[in-house]
Length: 377
Image (cartoon, rainbow, N blue to C red; front, side, top):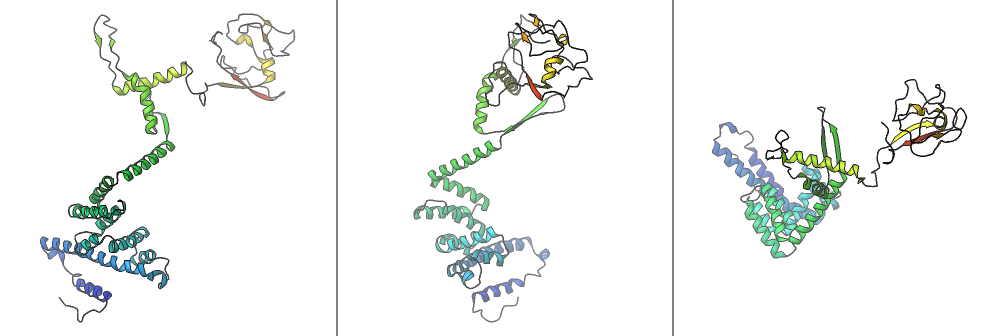
């Protein structure tokens, strides 16, 4: 192996000299090397990478402290200059500059471990971020750094990050609780804004429910349905005198039945909320003239309870006045050619169409009859 001649006089010359030494391995036929040599080469290369990262951290910390990038190189910041020089991501560039200053000035033990090759750059980044989240007491931070450096000899960066989070939670219980509460509030808001319920047909004669809501919504639903899911033993109808049989429904079926029964009970007892809880209604669009002149009450299958007083004219001159109960069949019906209004109680002729002449159209709201009145059949 050819050794470089002369002694470098600048830091850049030393690094360039090391690069020229490593260049002798560029043409190495690794296929001819033994497994032990390959593994040893990777181990030393990783140790060298950590050493170079520690060396670079010291140089970057000094460049940042002097403001060279802004004052002499006309860059907006040291992080922007380094990001461009290294060709890395902006977030990585800013993190490298921030960590470099912390490693050199505060986390000296971690920096020394990087120089010795015991800690990788990724592990050092985890340690620096974790110590920054600890309480500001110097003793607590020194103990935390020592604990994480010891753990770094056994754990990779991912597992070390988990250990660091646990350390922060143990060392700063109040701060961990505050962060947990903020995270729960954020998750609750996200769940509330993303709430939905979808009821779709499955194409096989049934439906599927799919939805999402907050934990509080789920607790309210469970509180309403779970008491109704108790198994109900029954008697076999083919053997009334026999013993009671076990409820054949599983928990899922009982929960579904509880949901359906709760909805039916709400509908039959007027329990839905007043806001957006109105009963369905049928809107019949017709004109006032058709309502006065065109109704053929003889076609309506109602049970008359009292006669209707009607003026001796060919049509209604004013809205009919019922003497009591539901309307009876009038003594004289309008002309067969008169149009008839649509109604949910009888089928309109196929050629029927409302007259659009005369007064403006209006919406007649057909609601369910009161309990005292006989319903249409």
